[in-house]
Length: 123
Image 1 (cartoon, rainbow, N blue to C red):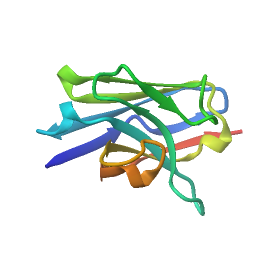
Image 2 (cartoon, rainbow, N blue to C red; image 1 turned 180 degrees about the horizontal axis):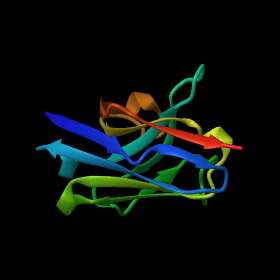
Image 3 (cartoon, rainbow, N blue to C red; image 1 turned 90 degrees about the horizontal axis):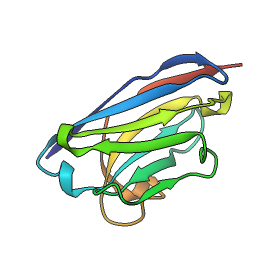
Image 4 (cartoon, one colour; image 1 turned 90 degrees about the vertical axis):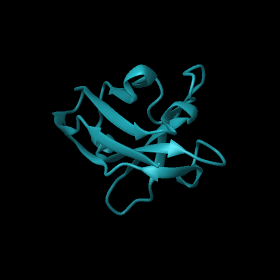
């Protein structure tokens, strides 16, 4: 129904920036909210940011507010996460996901997931 492919991850020093991209295909993209979630080793997957289909509403975890910015380009079926002022605690696999029923603020609110892209932030 929908396929999501993340890119843009890598290794950076603390204070650096990365821009993640999520390329979506399938007929459901334009009618769905989208989110970024992450999972660090030994931790539960957690919400990072989300954006409504129209882009009018955005949501951020407190831990990234003011540092990360989510956006989407529906014409190109792409969602972005601009990550600035990165911290070592941001190290995780970052997943792009399509919102399903329920809240944007929990992984349970998403029904399709990308493969993930690794972000590593060194001290």
